[in-house]
Amino acid sequence: MAPQSTPLPPTNQPLGAVSPGHWVGDRYEIIDPLGHGSNPAQPDPATSANPIRTFLGWDHHSNSQVVLKALPFEQLQAWKPLERFEREARALSQLDHPGIPRYLDYFEHREPGAPVSTFYLVQSW
Image (cartoon, rainbow, N blue to C red; front, top):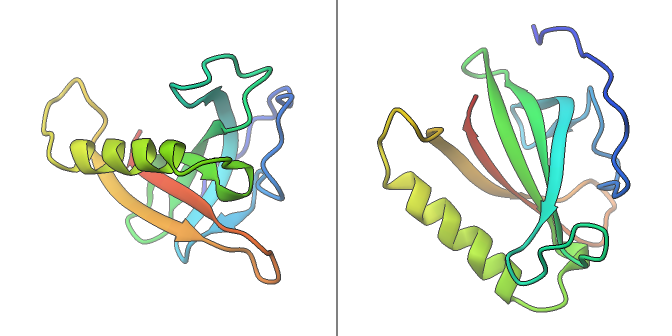
């Protein structure tokens, strides 16, 4: 069972229906938003067309807390942000260092009936 959610102030850039209690993939439950940022090409989150959102989540397969980074495909104006996100996932999958959160998963998730997908990178908490 996921730990109790602690309400945090909402960010100024919502990511679809992803909120505490929401499930993504077949195993991850969103607990709380942790923050948001942008891709390296557009570093200002207030004006970025490609925000990356970060969530504290619960992995129901391993019964552990995880961090989910989300890149919403609907906001991509070019493939560059997705290429960078995928490159980050590949690089993290090859690293093993106590100072770097461990890579756990990378996947694309589309909500039923949604016209576009969101890409997720999952790391240890």
